[in-house]
Image (spheres, rainbow, N blue to C red):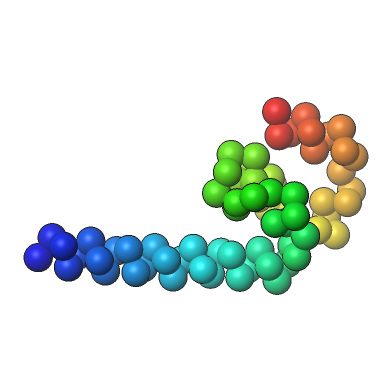
Amino acid sequence: MAKKLRDLLNVDLQIVQGQVHNWIDRYFPEFFTVFKSWEGKAALHLLKLEALPDELVRYTDEELLEYLR
């Protein structure tokens, strides 16, 4: 029973990870040229800004770097 539940959770996790990856590919096509994985600390921190690319260009490089630190 526990193995079956674990398998179901793993399938659900893969589905959610795929959805996030697809969303990032759609709205941030250059994201994976900057970050190796969307699950890294800096990548997640940048995604928490909840800003689309056209909104991110309003920030200076220094502001983004400071935010990520």
